[in-house]
Image (cartoon, rainbow, N blue to C red):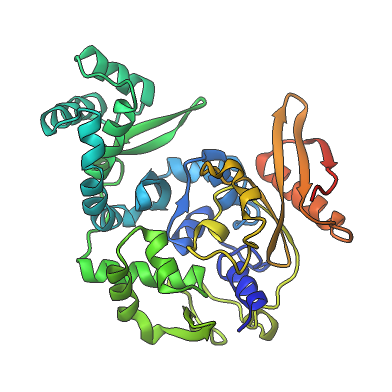
Length: 380
């Protein structure tokens, strides 16, 4: 296996380059296991580009239909996860994250009594199926004498989510709402720790392979020991290849095989070899980058800072050509449509038409017309 094949297989396994994919928004989240979503609109496109024919309104309807749940899960960050998985995903992530946040709680003067009182007030506000905005919840706390300044409010909500009390509800106007988790997803499953680790490992390596156990540990935010335990439980279902001293794992692909989600996997000789070409416009925070600790197979280290300017943790939307990140793009919504600006890191001669087609697909997803499309000059 070489770097190009790793990139090609990841494009396929993540549903980016699968022209024959018929995944619904629900199936996209199920296949990937989780979709990072601290930027809501970026997450919408991450799901949409993998679900041919989907639109923004269809993805949001899937949220309203409770086919996926938006909440804080792995790595202390907001993700979409399959509805039926949310409880066992929290059971894996929450204990370690809550322990790690203890020092921050002390800095914010959020003791156990304050958090317990906050959670009681939040439950009372949300019970009975209420969908309440963040501002309304924080106002409720303030009226009860609980300060929400200096990130105290954010941390109270974060802590409440990891305690299994709340999750995000559907968008109301332009505001996200919160709901009670046990009311929103009453049929979510619980699994034993061993079963949960194995299931999560299979989800990860099915959609993200080829990947290493270090990638898996980083993606989940769990310890390397736990990641190895999950991998060990499913090794018989994976293929292993060694590159530069590292072991890469991916789900076994045979003609007519079925994925972990029960979807028929299309099998072509060329696809199985990871020989994928093409142009893709990915959102910021996409799993193609954020799904791995080591991103060098698809993102050259010397240009990585251009994806996260200022190293501020904000990942820009990316242009991918033949598996490699070669630029960024920006979209700006205006009254007459969406303006799109292409920022290449190298000449994109011969790929202009492909980019135009991907812009068209994005506009179709957003159900809005194009304002203007601008190709910026390459700046070294």
